[in-house]
Image 1 (tube, each protein chain N blue to C red):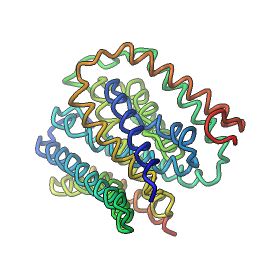
Image 2 (cartoon, rainbow over the protein chains, first blue to last red; image 1 turned 120 degrees about the horizontal axis):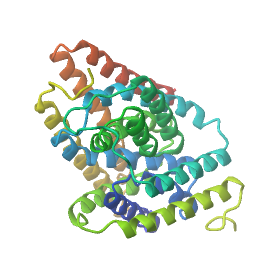
Image 3 (cartoon, rainbow over the protein chains, first blue to last red; image 1 turned 90 degrees about the vertical axis):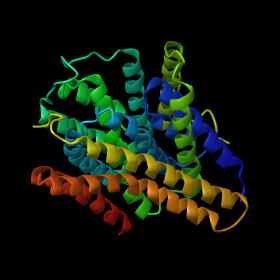
Image 4 (cartoon, chains in turn red, orange; image 1 turned 60 degrees about the horizontal axis):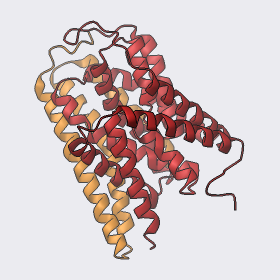
Length: 261
Length: 98
């Protein structure tokens, strides 16, 4: 078999995972746009591969949060009933929604991520040590939506989970980050299981992407702890906006890079 | 009720270990599969596919571990919640396999 593309995929996943780690955000959101635009990969194949990478990143980074007892595992398992239900619904919808709509939805999520990077998260819970989750039913509804979007677009949906936890449940920031990260793996596994059983996860794409994500996450945690983030943050916002624009164009059937010819 | 209350540290340590070593194991299988495929052996890609299946299985094992823990602690409410999550994932798999 030809190995050029696999090396590319590995390197791309490694790079995004590395950068994502520095900024403390999931890199899953970059994988689908990269694959569809530059890799000339079908969007459903890209979504399947991205889900595996999302699982790998969530599981690979969970241990330190658990050790520090930041992850609220009871709240996580409760909210996971909502995220996995949403994912199940997303699996149903994924085959029905036209590809252009998926691109459009993806562009919206990219814009939302850019907006979230721009505005600082505000601490809404008073103290780190004692807190209680509030408005759990509202949180559950938002989590259902996050699971749905995760299954449809192949992303971790941290971008939707974190506001739900910050504003609806009013958890301390570190707790909601750790708990959201913990839940992302199970949510993605719920839809990935269906896509895997359907034979929609292409190993030649998903394997190098997953491996690159793990290596990038490990390196990111070790090497890049001290890199100053503000400039990278600005760069990331720029990339998010560019990708959103490109995904919007793709939604209307225009692709400037890649395909076309 | 949902405070991070009397849960013993042990469960968190165990889940952390499960996820950490599980990720390394799945990544190792994927890497081995890709390496074998690189040596142009037909066996490579199926091995990499098995590694991908391991990745998908890992969060499911984590929920199963929580289920066992809650049942042992006689915390049947959270035991039922964990069982429900497992059940939803299983439904998803069988819908895909249909």
